[in-house]
Image (tube, rainbow, N blue to C red; front, side, top):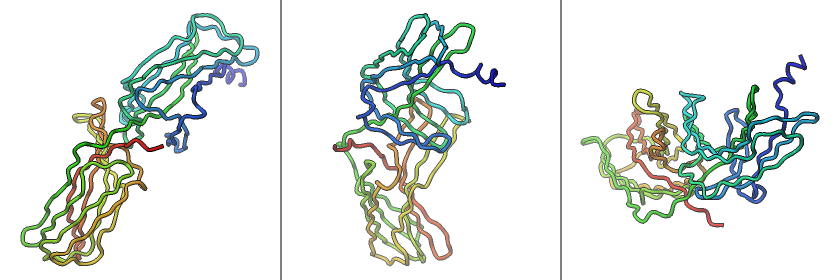
Length: 301
């Protein structure tokens, strides 16, 4: 039995390290098994530099027909699990065919890599970036090792950022106006606004503001939409009267938001909505939803 197990054991240890691994910022990500991993953090057009070390197990030698490293950007849709759509694929050859008897290191560099899309772990989709080292062999299976890294991209402050003004009502029963100070928010921003009651003829019990994330994946008949309520913020408890105004001040920093993603590689989108909910004394719910744009602002060091 030990012989059989040994037959499937990798004959070497492969380690992929980044040249600035000790000083580079890290991202904490949740893996599929629920555990948290700490991985290096990059942004588009950075150089990705490091080295690969291959160390045969004691008494082993590795005959190969080439060693290569690939930088891959992949999208995996969970209803099509196991099929990866590569939107970025770069390769560097590290070694020509030969044999490895002892520990060997290979430097690698991918210069100014264009990584337009951010890394994302969603409900039905995952976008990831990996380094993949392959030792190609004849007659036996290749030896493969992976190293994840995370990508975040930053946007400037929008030059145009209009406020949102909307009216909602039920004829002769309820008429309210709500106003948000802008339509585009960065991840650490504050939503500031006001709600005006112009007509109130039904008994409102309470009112809350929700932040909702809507993830759309696939296309056509294979479109899947998942909506999560990320935050609920009580604006009012009790009945409002005509002419009353309720202030809104909601901090976004406590919530795990991502930027808005629109039609990423024709595979998925992530949008955010502010959902205003009013509940009357008979527990009927009235709501009005408004899309907002969320972006990642460069953090000051």
